[in-house]
Image 1: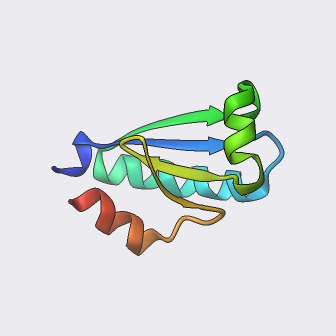
Image 2: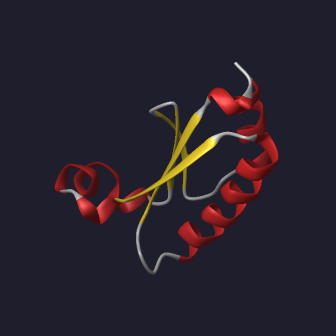
Length: 82
């Protein structure tokens, strides 16, 4: 699947500096690689807060957890190239 076929979701929260860094990187990569990027505030729903609150930011690729806290660019690129 080319990158444009992937849906990437960033689970984050307001005031999280790691989340801001992840968002900047993912926006840049989205523009370069063409994948869809969606942001979701973990504090918007109790189920998200319960599951991910202590690990934000969390990156999901096609609904599956790819990683949390920091986006490893090389690893991320490899994952969306599949």
